Length: 271
Image (cartoon, rainbow, N blue to C red; front, side):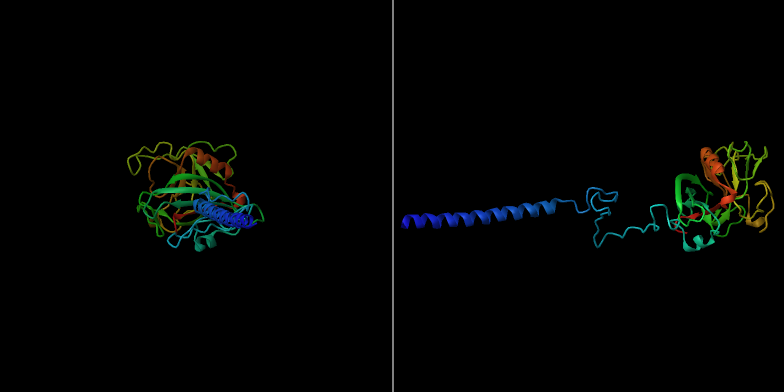
């Protein structure tokens, strides 16, 4: 009998020891798994998590907070991003096409162009594709003068177009097909200018709206410059215009519609 009690006590001690070891192993396994799981998840692009539908991101006290995007709905943007409040307020209320030209820096001649549109009666903006562009050789200015080799910052209507070549089919802006659209000489960096004015869209800086881009009237005076256009890129900086590839110019001519009151908002990043 004593031997049976001794064996029973031994089995109970062994059972308690096995549970303790098993519990330690499980704790170690769980701790290791939690340590090994990526803190920011596997999707570093910030795409929504498949289970919760929310994005995950890791941060630390030394990690800068991510830039806040414009409020967005499933149908579009509440506000055009990367514009100052002052620039947004200068966009006419009836404008439903806004071409945003964002310079890389104040003194840079590299830009990015995006066309934003909104439907009639909607306050939500839809972004189109982005295009590389050139602006003036010395960058940007809020006080443009003739010969300063800077593009004027601001918000300007787009009402008139023209070019050496006929208007692309579907062009809606008034278009002056004229052989006088010829760029003479060479660009700022010596590049040829042939074809630069095959297609142009006048930017309504210091000009009379409703006239050909070739019109020389300067309401603010000649010293404030003029003849600021969107035109075909010649692989170099401009004197004050914004230049884009010919296929982009054709696309804009087919898309910009006077009935939608298109405007251009242009300037360096952060302005």
